[in-house]
Image (tube, rainbow, N blue to C red):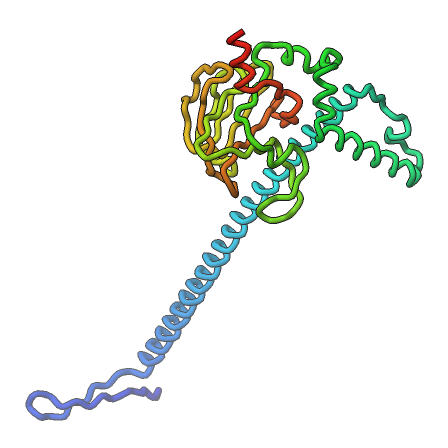
Length: 301
């Protein structure tokens, strides 16, 4: 005869009688199996939750890394763009200086598949430094003034009435066009215009007739005005304290468009002035020939 096993629970009822409650043993097995399944389920859920937390944390790290890479890419893209503008500007300057002095291409400096000797490199560097020195000292400006007809690429607008030949302010030149030492970090930097030191609030005059295409705050420049003179020529006036015009307004040569200030990246009141041809900065020195005093004398005569 098959034996049956029971689990007895002894309890006392309301009348004080002892009562025995038999439970078959196989019920205990069912309970244990259920408890094990429950524990496995809870453990699995806990593991899934932990994996989910890890994945969320990893996703956040990847997203932060992506954002940082995107910011770095934007910065590198901006630096690359600035370098391209500098190369184009210096290339334009070298071409203009070469045209002024009637220089021709030296066949020894043209890249070839042949081995280039060290003395050829040194000769090219000497030529570059000579051109750069003469261009930034004013000798090139004088040559351009005497021989502008030979510069076919610039003759169309240098003869035009809207050429930016008027000094926007009259003061001491504190920084020239081209390479210089950055006043903030002491490192070499490219200066895309000239700095003219004058008193705070000095009126700034339009260098030529044109239309105001920009008049607001720009990083580094502070409050800045851009005047479009046509023919791909534009002038910029930076670090202003205020505006005397509005975007879209037509201005005349000598008209007051703003006032000297200290906005943007500056150490003292001055005007940062640029001339750009097809968005490429060029040396403003070679176009500045007239002051407001001279304009007054001409109008009087």
